[in-house]
Length: 205
Image 1 (cartoon, helix red, strand yellow):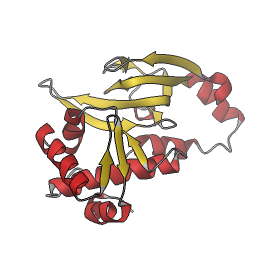
Image 2 (cartoon, rainbow, N blue to C red):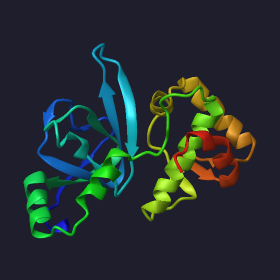
Image 3 (cartoon, rainbow, N blue to C red):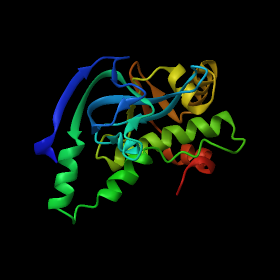
């Protein structure tokens, strides 16, 4: 689909790719950087639904409703590709062997985390989040040993239903146990097996 792609950006931290109730006109992918999908409830409270990595598709969940219910926001300097849906549909007619249903399934299940239901410990949630992020990067052909974290600790906490303070404590605790090593922009995974074992209850196999 490269020949129909339109570049958008780069967008900066906090800039919107699209907002809630925007008409559905296209699907998107992250070309570089990272983005988050944010849902807003009737009380105006935000929930970080997902983080999106380079190569992951965004927006196909709006096909049926023809409107984007959530917002997508850039995290750091982020470049997107836009694929007009009319052109995508034309390609699907001309090339019926293209497995569009698999693309749609991938877009609807960006994360493999089972965060809803279950009384999971904070350590389990955070370990599973790191493993899920690492595994998705590996699947996309990105560096998997180092995880850039352009999102805030508040965003991570919101996504995992943890406080910002808990996320900070977990980072320190995991570093002390030599599960990870930190720098200013992200972290290195030092003991993947231990992290995977710790978070296994939340990871879909």
